[in-house]
Length: 120
Image 1 (cartoon, rainbow, N blue to C red):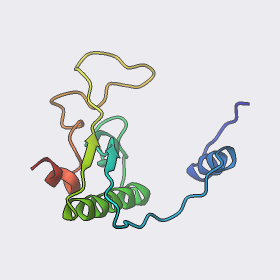
Image 2: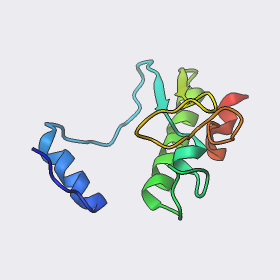
Image 3: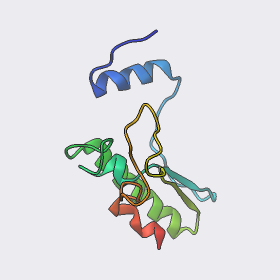
């Protein structure tokens, strides 16, 4: 079934209807575990940083970045691992159907400024 989803709310409602999940807040316990961050890069999260980045400030993205930063700090304070996967592409190699994005050397492939501390 293919439908036209024109708003973020409609898209989220369709995803929630299709997936049997019940999102809950995450509370860090005492049991060692790791945190995986995926694609929190400028090219997807920083305003004006490429064709797939937001064109204006976006509260949902800002909240995601802030929560990721908070969790990463909590995990590192406990000595637990934090892994960050960064979308990175060789310049000039197409990735249809997407426009060129997160190419090496463009800055789009770098962690958002709030998470750069993870690289030190």
